Image (cartoon, rainbow, N blue to C red; front, side, top):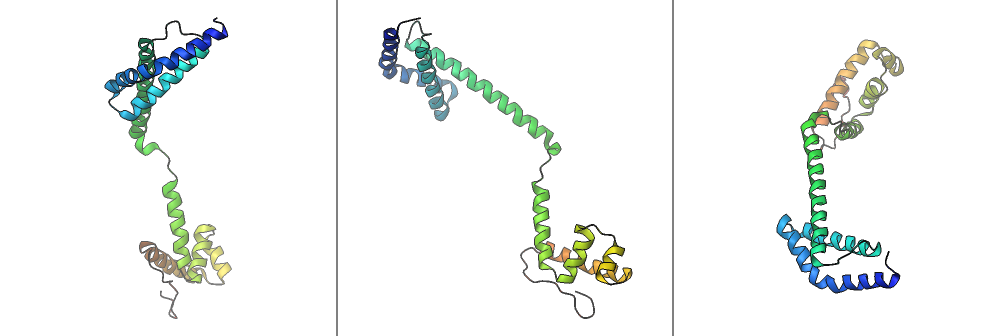
Amino acid sequence: MREPAAQGDSGEALLALYDEALPAVYGYLFARCRRRQIAEDLTAETFLAAVDAVRRDSVDDLTIGWMVGVGRHKLADHWRRSAREEAKVRALQESGDTLDDPWDVELDRLMAEKTLAKLGSLHRLVLTLRYVDDLPVAATAEILGRSIHATEALLTRAKASFRQAYAAPTSTTTSTPSKGGLP
C-alpha cells in the first residue's frame, strides 16, 4: 500500500488527467451508446469509480487508456441493466391479463358510490341494504316495513334508476320515486 503522500499524488494526477480524459471518455461512450444523457451519466460514473480506485490505492497506471477501460466496464454494466429491465418489461407485457390491477375495481367502486349519492333516499336505502349490506330481499323488506313483492318491485325501480344515473355520470339530478311508484 502506498503512503498517504503517494495517495495525494494519485489524486493530483487524477485531477491533472481529468481535463484530458473527460472528452476521451465521453467521446468513447457517446460513440457507442449514441445517447447524450446516457453518455454523460456513464462518464460521471467512470470518474467516480476512478476517484474510488485512487482512494483505495488500486490504480497502478492512471492514464486516459485506463479511464476509457473503466468507461467500457460502466457501459457494459449499463447494457446488462438495460437488458434485464427490457426482459422484465417483456415478461410483464406477455403476462398481460394475469396482472391483478385493482385500480379499475376501485374506480368502479368510487363511481358506484357517487351514483348512489345521486339517487333518491328510498332507492339508495334499498340498494344499500340489498347489495352493500348483502341482506336477502326478505330481510330488506322487513327493515323497510314492506312486503317481499313490494320490496322486489322497489329494487327493480332502484336498479333501473341506478343504471340510468351510472350511464350518465355528469348528470346532477337525483331520481326520486313519483306518487305512482315509478321513477
